[in-house]
Amino acid sequence: MLEMTPITIEGETFIAVTLKLPKTNFMAVTNDVGYIMCGALDVGLLNDKLKERKIVAGRAVGVRTIEQLLEAPLESVTLEAEELGITVGTTGKEALLKMKYDS
Image (cartoon, rainbow, N blue to C red; front, top):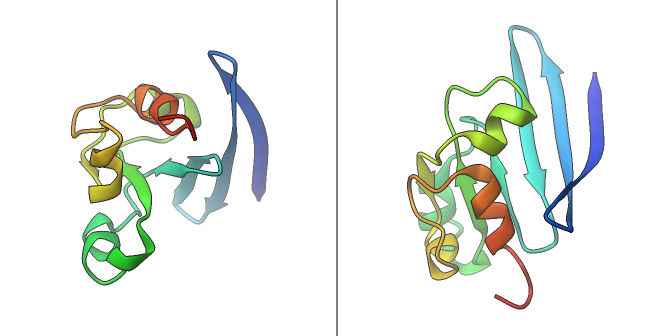
């Protein structure tokens, strides 16, 4: 089952996506600038093989719900996310709030 839900964090709107798969969930929260995602995200691939795309993203591991994804510290982030001040240990919610056009 696929769920897409708009969420608002401090006046900013994001889209939360949950894809329920056998024995696991795939989760992401996104806007037009970037996204945070569950452990399925391969940050190394984004930083190395897809570097020219300048993807802003962060990964949290061990999360099972969107709420946990928002509260969890990011385990890894892309180089482009670091340019916005998003670092390892930043919570998902804090990272999303840094993903604005006026950053």
